[in-house]
View 1 (spheres, one colour):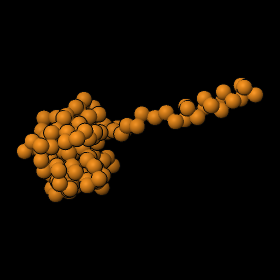
View 2: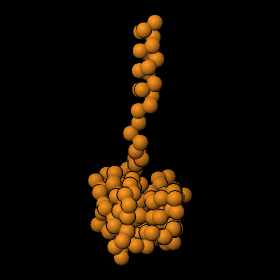
View 3: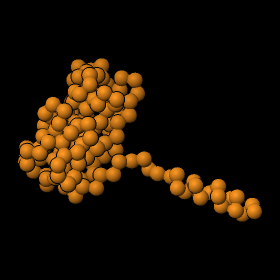
View 4: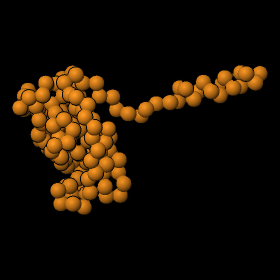
Amino acid sequence: MKKYAAFFFIIPLFFSCSDSGVKNTNPYLPNYSVLIDLNLNLPQYSDLKFVSNAVLIPEKGVRGVIVFNTGSGYNAFDAACPNQALSSCSTMTIKGINALCACDNQEYSLFTGQGKLQYPMKQYRVQINGDVLRVFN
């Protein structure tokens, strides 16, 4: 009976393990390490204190990182077009609550990262600590 008790105790532990990460398996975008700390009290990031505002942080990630205030938290996405090979037109721009890819004129929601094509925007994790946002993968 003790063998069965140990078995029933250990098996659920295996099923409860996860990496709690976002999977980004996009053949167009390389996996670069990202670690950005944004102080919301600085003028260049203060717009992020308000719902539905986005800020582009250039020269991070593949083509920059877009950080967006959803109202219930923050999303961070790479600014590279997710359905295009890297080129001169593959950096997205912010268009209200969407990101626009200049290569194919596709829009992607900054709430979800979803567009109409196969791959969504490459998402990064966001951690909030007071007035500092940490964006990382």
